[in-house]
Length: 167
Image (cartoon, rainbow, N blue to C red; front, side):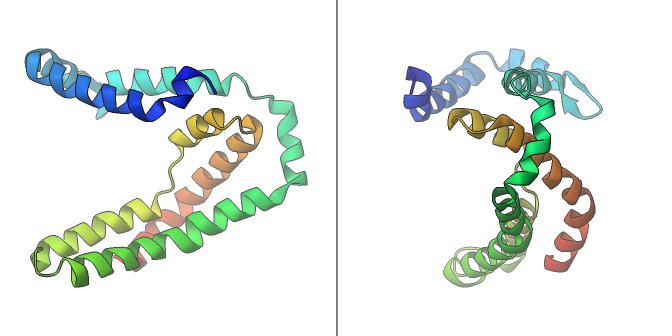
């Protein structure tokens, strides 16, 4: 592993500290940057995400995507975890923590809202960061692309019904 990968936790912590310090020192600058948006998407965030994901996307050999079907176990596991286990687990954890464990500290209205937030997080599989994780672990970018794409397609049809059922 390189220095960046080896000390990733340290770099993230340093970036958080730098962001907090810069936000306090230059609040006007960051308020101006926050106003730069198009269709409710912050342009700075969009550009930085693109810079983060683009190098991983150019590594993909689109002709090799056909070979992904030869190894379906990883894709099936991802789909089962993302759509059959994670949403219901998050709903159960939300109920356990906010209705039982933290019931004395969180009022019922706030508990309901926190549970709803946990359910929405559980129903939405993470897609953008999967490319980063795959690259950091030297994963197969072609396989990663197929996993993310299939999850995105399923999300279009499954997100609303599962969220409505759990909420």
